[in-house]
Length: 147
Image (cartoon, rainbow, N blue to C red):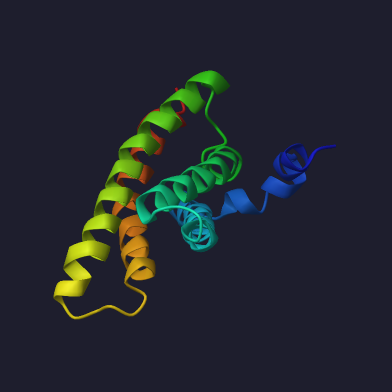
């Protein structure tokens, strides 16, 4: 059995589904965001900052899709293809926010405040946070809607 099927088995989901949806979203999204943030560091050694943030965001999105689908919004009756399409659309909007906020904070806001130590790391974290709220509502209303 593959890991995705094993994690989505009813015996593994029962205790998770007792946690409120918003808390499950924060846990799954927080884990995806942490993965996104951590992966950016090695990518920055070989790519420009904006490209590293974009690739890291895609990696976080893949993890997020699996986590949200199985642990946050498992009751959706929508076709997988429709869930995936809408997930990508919601995340493309969010990715634009994450990249724009990250670049603006790293290049302008933090340096103008005299913050130069780990400016890219801090800016990327702020960017990830900026996209979280729209992600929750977008995924709840579109990607994994229960209708």
